[in-house]
Image (cartoon, rainbow over all chains, first blue to last red):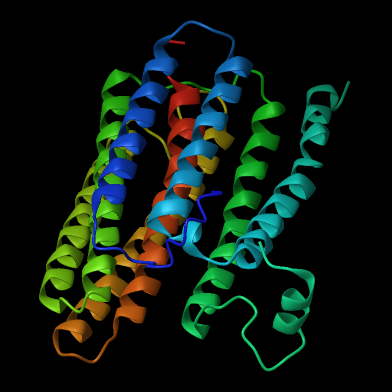
Length: 104
Length: 206
């Protein structure tokens, strides 16, 4: 996102970035489906899929939702709040394992 | 990017520090809030799945193909929506409306395939509180998360139709189209997490 080469023509005439984003998202989806058929541990598969999904989400936000062309302060505010809530909620996950030993 | 004094000037009042319209800021705040809702649903799903080592994996290749097709429809509708916003910005309202109609068609196809898939699962005996695969919570999570997402797609379609109609009669501006687009892209973005976490991690072949 450090392409600050004065692309302030926020909505340039070219539709190429949208086509490129669309194709990249489709390719990443195909890769995810293919990974689902590769034999590996469920934990590794989940990690890989989550990483790919974060890349896809970033592509959608940067190009389709134009965040690439917004002011940095705006982007930081939005992304920081999203990261905060995810980290805070993930603090609950270890407690899920407690269910395995309930009643024992 | 910006030097210290310029930053201070931005935030000392009388200016719009984010340099976005109130419409766009409002929609982004809503999207962040809505993302919190989905984040909570996903964490709830992860929590329950962690506690059930025998979590069902009922999706066969047919289901995965169907879900991939749904992903294709939603991604493509997001792309046509991005084009619609660009056209509206250029002042080409009729092209913008055309691309919004394409977007609505993509969203409708998504909903139709999704509804067929729900019917398939329900015919196999799945409901919100029970299913034939052992862990009742499996379909509880499945129907809650995908149902919540379907509700978002359906309301997004209504928004798109209203804005497209208004744009056609020159009652809406490019800003309205862009903000409707932001919502639609968000709905697409959420599906990018539902597809791998719900479907690909519950494939029968694994």
